[in-house]
Amino acid sequence: MTTQPNAPRLSATVLIVRDGANIPEVLMVKRHYQIDFAAGALVFPGGKANAEDASADWDPYTDGDFGPVQQDARIAAVREAYEESGLLLARPRAQRGTNQPLVGPDMAEKLDPFRSAVDRGEQSFLELIRDNDLVLALDSLVYFGHWITPDMMPKRFDTHFYVAPAPPDQIAAHDGRETTDSVWIGAQAALDAEETGEAIIIFPTRMNLKKFATASSVADAVERFGRETVITVKPQQSETPEGEPCLIIPDVEGYGQTVELLSRVNV
Image 1 (cartoon, rainbow, N blue to C red):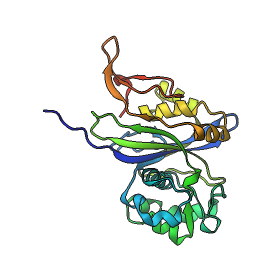
Image 2 (cartoon, rainbow, N blue to C red; image 1 turned 180 degrees about the vertical axis):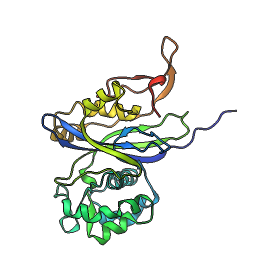
Image 3 (cartoon, rainbow, N blue to C red; image 1 turned 135 degrees about the horizontal axis):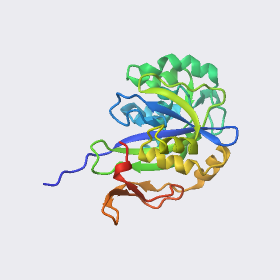
Image 4 (cartoon, rainbow, N blue to C red; image 1 turned 90 degrees about the vertical axis):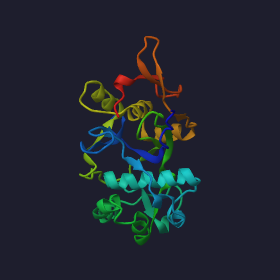
C-alpha cells in the first residue's frame, strides 16, 4: 500500500540582516529544547502561517500587493519576526508607501508586551496593527528562497524565505518561550559553529546561510537577491554512488551543493 505524503503547510522565514563591522550579520534565534521541530537549533525567525495571515482585512494595513500566497507568507514572516525577536517591520499608516521609514524603537517597545499573546493566538496581530495605525512593510522583504520538505518527512512545510534589512535602532530579543537565545552573527561564522559542533543548524537553514554568505553588505543582498529568480527546492531521497542514503536538491546558484547525506540532516 502506498502512503500519500502529508500536505506541506505554508510557512515563512525571514533573514533580518544588518551591516556588521566588516560583513553583514543575520539575526538567528535558538529553538527551545522542548519544541517538537528543530529543537535546540539555530534558526531564522519564522513559522507556520495562520488563518488570520490570509485575511482580506489586511489589505488596508499592508504595503505592497504580492498575490494570495506571497501576501500570506509575507504577513506570516513579519508576524513571526515580531513574535520571536520583537522586531517590527511596519511603518505608520500615515507614511504608507514603498521605501518609507520603518517604525523606531518607541513603537516596537510599546507593542513588545503583546508578543506572547499574539504568539498564543490570544491577541489578533491584525487588530494590534490596526489599533496602532500601522501598516506592515511587506515591500521591505526580498524574496530569497523557497523550500518544500521532502515527501517522506512526517512534518512538511512549504517555506518561503525572505531577506529584510533590520529596522534601525530597534532592539532584537528572543521570546523566552519558543526561543531561548538570539544572536547577530555572520553567515560564515554560523556555518563554522555548526561544522565544529558548537551549534545545531538544520539543512535548509544551512543552505540559505551559504547563499547569504555570498553577500558583501545589506545593500548588496537587497539588490542582488532582489533581481534573482527564486527556484523551488524540494529535496528528493536518493543514494550516492557508494550506496549512502542522501537527499538531492536542484543546482541552485549560491547553495554550493546538490547532495546532502541523510546522516547529516538534522530535523
